[in-house]
Amino acid sequence: MTEKPTGITANKSKREFTIQWDSGHVSVYPFGLLRAACPCASCRGGHENMKSEPDAGVFTKVMGDNSSTRIANVVATGSYALTIVWEDGHDYGIYNWHYLRKLCPCEVCRKA
Image (cartoon, rainbow, N blue to C red; front, side, top):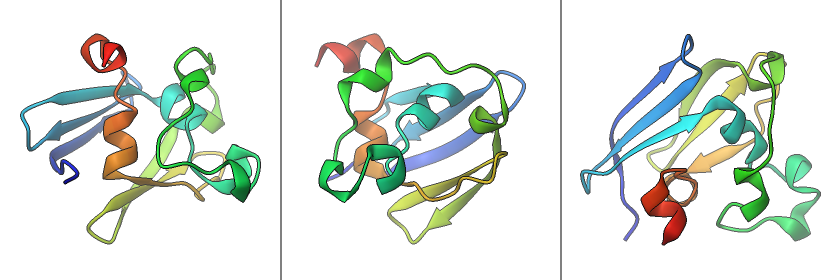
């Protein structure tokens, strides 16, 4: 069973997106990581590259502060995911709870 969030915040000044999970875990995502890990077909290089978990390379990809890494809005997608609207207009990625949990950049999750 996929964990579900109990709280979600986006801090634009810190450029951090935080999810509190029902397990008690807290994930803090830099905006650049979320954009680097965009799960849409265009960012993944086509439907054949779509997977249920993020590629390992997103954790080392550096993305600067620009319109492609600034969140304009976050929209609930059903009860299973979020769609992030970026300031550059990109809004194709649907970040489901499983994907976001696997994307957690904390040291404990990266070792697991």
